[in-house]
Image 1 (cartoon, rainbow, N blue to C red):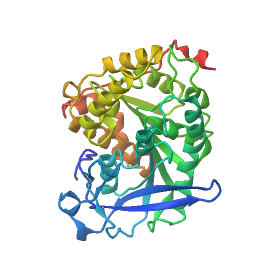
Image 2 (cartoon, one colour; image 1 turned 90 degrees about the vertical axis):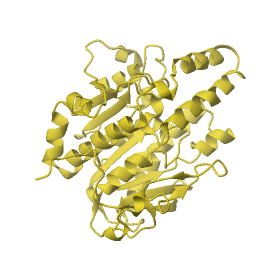
Image 3 (spheres, rainbow, N blue to C red; image 1 turned 60 degrees about the vertical axis):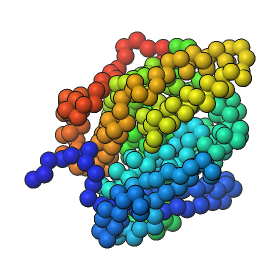
Length: 369
């Protein structure tokens, strides 16, 4: 019998489809991309650079590719469903390495653009980071986006069969916050995987609307696995500790050592170093405390060459993310045993260094209430 290995790509070739769905109740439309297990006729094509799908996140700024075949025929078997929420100023295709890994193991993954809060919106100036009104708007709309996509997927609008009682959710940064918030309002979600989530309160930021908006009252058992980065310069580890402390059991958290905020995205070096360069230019045009705060944050950002290699980050997220959903949605006993083993030792064998968050006896949480 083959040993359980969640790090290895799965047996299924991966297909991808694109949709534009309209939520008539809220009078809004959003692009939604789907990744799914394809039939065996596409075996190897999803790994062929000449065949795999190419796309532009921002028109005119160059094409990206993903390990999936556009509009490939799907396997007919029903699959568990994972919803993914992108970060502030992100995009639905921000973490295709993870979506494709899950799809190769038999999952259907759906990721939507949170319209008005995407990369294109940020570049155009429509989604200025840090503005309270913008944050408040998406505190309300992002969970509704996720639930709407679940509705559409369960109704068969993608043409794929998904299993109604096997729904999980993941997301990065603001999308990690969206994952935690949607647990409060949508009881169909059975397991969660927040990646470097926003919304953690810190001692220096006690008036945090995103932190205050989370109540962690899910009224059911929802296993949560946090995957976070030791050197996160945008959302420091203290905030991750706060979220972990406030989460009900069962929960776990793995910290990627020498990782920063963009280690959960495709094209890590480009995203990390590009962000630092762009924000550095913005800091030079700002005045007063806002400029000082931004410059202090950027000063903490090491160049990508001094951080953990991208392949180690992807190994961690793919392996532990898949194992979490296998254990909690599919009930795979080997996945549960894997997660309850000495993960630090297992990952060290793959040259990945991690630590674990644990419950803090004394915390500033009371200042957020």
